[in-house]
Image (cartoon, rainbow, N blue to C red; front, side):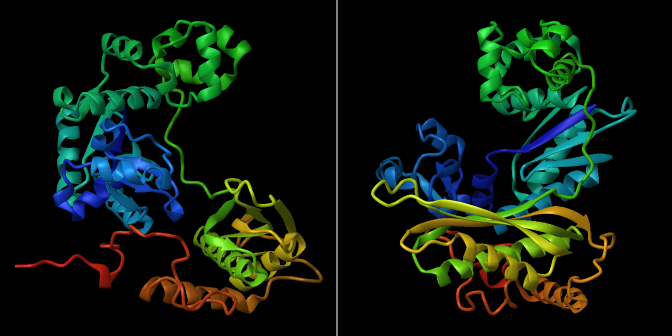
Length: 419
């Protein structure tokens, strides 16, 4: 059996853990630079707040509906996610962390296990250990466990947050209830194709023949169809090295000066290098891009990017910052008002397996230097040691006017207990 555990309204729930006075009240979480709504509590959804709503257009709506608005607090959310996943890992024989708020579980030879009681206990432990409410769905396949989880969350009063599809009768009933656009892996384009041929529910999808699905769509959809029929085609995914790492950000304000953008590019390159070292990889190329704001119709629009093929594989912050700066020099144009930039590192090789060059290689001294910097930053706080090309005085570059404290990752922001 496969299980899917999903944290309910995860970002909003994280805020409520440390603000119990917000229980039952509408909450909205904004994207980077407080741009648009990326998460809503159930109460905010009922008030009609749409996903992706631009914050500046909905300021009056927030006030009228008394919606509590927060800037996205990713250090807090990431730490709370780790705590939830650690509890799940202790209770399940196998786990695949699917996203920041979801995890697949796998149980083999579990005839002896009462899944209902096990799932109830799982929910209790997560709530007791973290304060985050979760929903649990069990079924014979990963795709069906997604359906089961959706039912457990939609009908919490009846299911108690746990639903198990353990019979063909339950499976068919669940598939008839599930809209085709809500099926795991079915996107907008595929939904339109399905509806053109009269497929409106997951059950309708399973009534198509394998041959038709294979000829008109692809083998991926055939596997999905079999999953919905209760035939396991997908196993838990192993943790894999990322194939590329991207750090892209909108600026806190319009930048026109080269030095301002250079500082951001250097910082993005340093962050990419840290992530590379964490997964023990080096990159052979990187992409740098800059762009103006498409929302400012009166401004001249400009977008450009460049791919830098590196002379040798590296994960050194110093070297990647140098190559990223060289890329920026090639694409920067004076006279434009820039709003966003980014660095993407690509073409990875394991740090202990790359081919040495006869003429030019990464500086071998950087490896120990980067190791020492990572250790210090991890021990006493990120960004304590920076490159000279970074802004030494300012850590937060994003607009985060409604940021809550990082209760669990910053000692000076830990919650105060008053007697």
